Structure formats: C-alpha cells, structure tokens
Length: 157
Image 1 (spheres, rainbow, N blue to C red):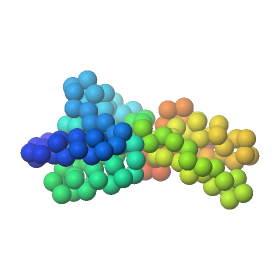
Image 2 (image 1 turned 180 degrees about the vertical axis):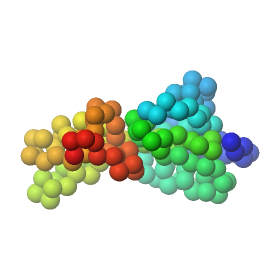
Image 3 (image 1 turned 90 degrees about the horizontal axis):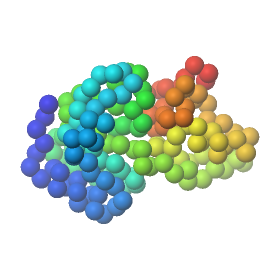
C-alpha cells in the first residue's frame, strides 16, 4: 500500500470545497468501499465522491502530480474486482454523478452521468421507445459508467 503524500488530502479538500464533492476518510466509509461483488476486501485510504467532470479532472491531475494510485468506482457491483483499490490510494466514486442531462429521441441519444443507475436510465428512455442495451442482473444497482468501464452487458444484452 502506498503512503499518501503530505498535502494530498488537503488538496482533495480544496477541490471538494469548490464543488459539491465530498472527501471521505472515516473508517466506516473506507470499509464500505473496500469490497465489491467478488467478496475480496481491499481498503482504500480515501474516497472522493465527485459530482462534476471538472472535479474529476482536478482530482486526477492531483493524483498524477502526487503519484497516488486512483481507482474509479461506480456502484461496486462488478464480479471482477475492477472497483477495488489494489494499491490503496484513492477511490474516485462517480455515484453522485447521476444526472440524466438530456434525451434526444430524434438522434437516438442520451447524455448521462456515469453514476446513472441502469434501471433509471431504462425507465427514462422507455417513453421515447429507446433502451440502454446492457441488461445485467444488477440493473437496479449498477451504473452506466461501470457498464462501460468493465464492458459489462449482462446475460440479456
């Protein structure tokens, strides 16, 4: 596990202060983000819950600058450990980036945040006679960003 550099958490706090993002370092939160559907437990050293792409960009730049490993995470429903922090460091959660920004039926296009839950997107698309093709058994919990990051489509896709 890496050691977080001096000033790293303060840098994340500054990013959070400029947005509605949240930095979590308490033991209960770290434990909640230490596992996914694999059952393997790997505890991160900090969790940053981004709400904007600007906060994500600033967080990734800070991690790069300070050589801190970063693990992106959706809902943590995956079966392959992709959301686990193998080297410690920061978990960058996209769960709060859960807005459906627009649906343009004429273009067959939906613009959504990575934290949008599959079932919520399906419900929003249905009145427009559109659908989101991934159909995993965890559709009521998993997120669009997680589907894309892990190439997860589900048994019915």
